Image (cartoon, helix red, strand yellow):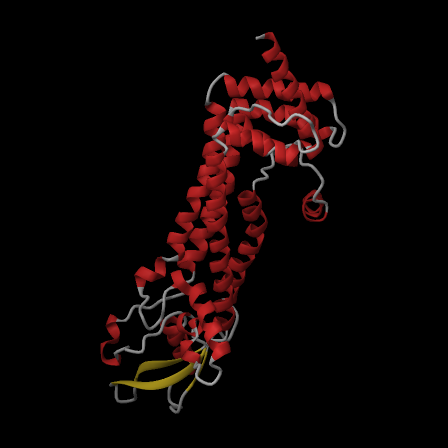
Length: 360
């Protein structure tokens, strides 16, 4: 029952704070966090669909063959790949592509899982991170109500862990960069079929979405000249494929018959892979944006302008001096302690900096 309550609070009460978990608020993390359940659902749909029958339906003129066996053979042979130049006399050289989709779906799922577990593990194991987490948790309990004592305590912890050593900077940057370097791994897994059996006739999964966009624009301009074979969805995930089934006849000799098979699941699979392709493309764009952000924030001037335009537009002072590691933490505080509390924290930091400058 408690598990159901947690699920309900997570999906139907998004403002409910989780006091035992630090929440990241940069766009890339949020995108992965919310798209993760959708991706998991896709993997399970693809996996469970293999147990639905009929997965493939074959028709032919020969009534002497076992069609159930023929359909199983053709499903293994042609469900995800079919070559126009398939040589029936050299069938031993043909490679069976049994559910090639899992070459990328499952490894990508594992990589996405590591993108969550490794940063959270590092955060929970670091002494400074735990110290900051404890102070943030105290503030979360009074979420929405400003407590100056707790604000000053957060500031003291921030100064202590960012000035004493560079451990916090390394931890925060590693968490960012780990997420950033995970995408090339996923794209490499996603493009695996380009090096396996992709050809000019079947197209490449690496350019799958782009080919689909070009096909749609071509389809709108040339309605009478477009054929089903030109559709990139049909090239990689054909719904109707020919199949040569070999069997031993009554005389004991090896015989063959030509079948025409329909794979209905490939109609859905082609669209699922289209979603995955655009999902990874969006991730790539977000990674480029995030790399630009963390690079630009290394400049003190840009950090000052960023703080002003995001938090302090309605205040007279324009510049708040923050170190790079503190900047990386503060940009993630609004989702943990609230936007207004973050503004008040920055005001306290500005006041502290003014006092230090006056003494000097």
